[in-house]
Amino acid sequence: MTHPNESTSDSNPLDQMIQVLDEYGFDGMAHAIEILVNEAMKIERSEVLGAQPYERTHERRGYANGFKPKTLATRVGQVELQVPQTRGVEFYPKSLERGVRSERALKLAVAEMYVQGVSTRKVTEITRELCGLDVSSSQVSRAAQLLDEELQSWRERRLGKLAYLILDARYEKVRHGGSVVDCAVLVAVGVLPNGKRTVLGVSVSLSEAEVHWREFLASLVERGLYGVEMITSDAHEGLKAARQSVFPGVPWQRCQFHLQQNATAYVPKVDMRSEVADDLRGVFNAPDANEAERLLKLAADKYRPKAPKLADWMERSVPEGLTVFTRPAAHRRRLRTSNMLERLNKEIKRRTRVATLFPNEASLLRLVSAVLAEVDEEWQTGKNYLNTETD
Image 1 (cartoon, helix red, strand yellow):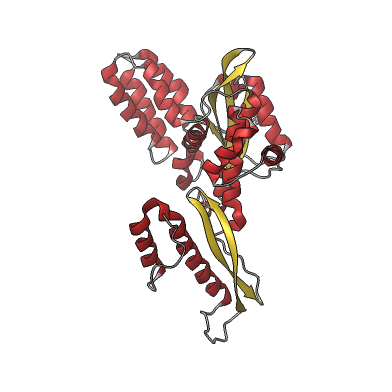
Image 2 (cartoon, rainbow, N blue to C red):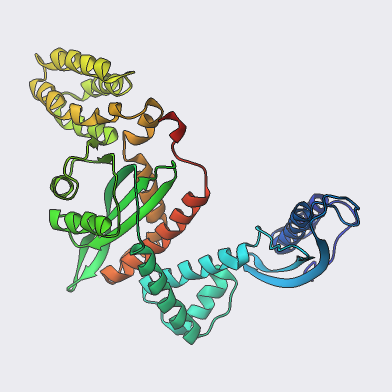
């Protein structure tokens, strides 16, 4: 079939796209993207210039200066674009992002191939499939080296003031000494004073023991992290000891989601679980700390006759999940659990499950770092996670 490389009509770009897709299906996707992106770039140029093509206006800031062809590699094939040029004002279309998206795809492809131990001879086929690119073995080796350097630089970048710190760990299978073992992936994220989220760092080790957590948290401080107002995490003993050692005096919010899960171990009968969960939600959703403490006392007294261990656990552990009431009301729902990190861990899992088993710790760290670096970039350019105007 001949690839559609000419406009299908004199109608508007959206109609052209629909016509191309109707006629060629998935094979016409690349051309449909060409139509859409080319039109978007022309609109963007007009906005930068302050005038439409051939329009005379005193608000004009520069002039159109033709087009420059550019080939962009995508997963649906090569996209041939016409990049608008300008004279008298600097302009580059945001929709292209200077090829960053294509470069990201290649980096992650190389990372995944690295993980799976794919020989450089086979890389050309895989990159062509994943990214629409043809690369040589030497280019792959160089890309892998540059990837490692870039990811190490990202992991060691300087940090600064942070409002809230959230910590969690997940596990991946790694070959070690002829055996398959669970490897801990420690991740730290936070909320900056301006309300933006950020991925602070990641560490990989064969243990989630205190020494691993302590070294990881200490590395954040060494990189310049300061000003933390509250830490949210689960109650893992190694993390707890490390947190108290590295961040003494910083208030700790025990993840309310994990508390809900922990409660089931103290419920003597299955048919009581729903009732206990409702009572805990009532405590956590209270309007203020005083009301939360009142509801907690009522719940503990209620269960003491028939479930004394549950009542004791409630009095001992649930107050650790009420620290968030010291923070602005508008911040509490997003700071009372480590769910933000749980969702991030799901994204990591989506990328790591293609490997199933990692050949070593370094390969695991490489891929997870690549995923987290991308997420961090998206967070920095996205919407604020918290409304800081409520402070």
